[in-house]
Length: 366
Image: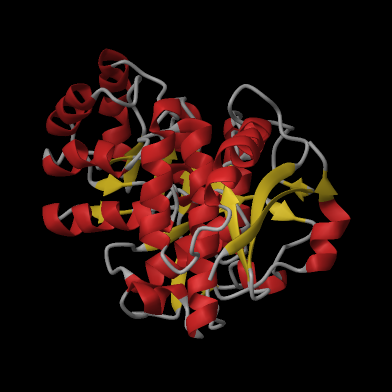
């Protein structure tokens, strides 16, 4: 069944959170922009994907429109593996990561959604079967900086039903305030977004040991520095996690094989979609390393992550961006419940389709 159209749709969802306006990647985020990829086949069936994201969306759109779409039109949507392999080989000279890989991720997710819809089953079933219908979520807070604000946000997270919290803080007072607010038993993770050299990471790791972190995420700059990550893991009893900035499944292999990470963290909208993500899952299975998906989004990328997690026992819990949306693309279907759990959609493909009224209301042109 041939692909006849690929459309880029950007929505900007308003949100609230506990601290001042902030963001990542060198810009504040007054709203949360997501890039949806709508793929239609000649029989009128529609699949939805999502490509990373946020401030890089204009570049990803250009790759989708100028490079990916001309190559993908008229390809057989049923041959997901063949189509994606053809595109990756053809486009590799423009980079095996970044906007090229983000664009391919959006298409790949949409093709899996189409495959599930055509077969009348969920993506999890296509991957080999559903192991569970509910998954624990953890809230992934924005950068808050002030210890008092961090503590208040942690207390609010507990009141909303979350049973684990991740911070984006780099100072010991802020992290310690979170641990005090949560108590000793609530899982606490800290993501510092590739902040430190090995020496800097070692200096803060010593006091962090006493705060009982479930994991320390992306402690090392640059993220490709496998040796420093391995040394940090050997020297301190803090589990380490990384992967959102590892650009494809091949680049994950040495991290898995050398066991320098306790958690592999592929991001389905960055790494190239479900096809590439599942290669990382298989690497984790082979090497005995758990998987903790990076998923700070609320579109088809989150649904794809949930479908993978429903299938893979390597995944314990799912990241949920620590904000409160004023509108959801899927109503309650794409958000955790009052007990801090995601329910896996039982519809074919990704389990849910986006609400067209929400898309129309919050669509923006870039």
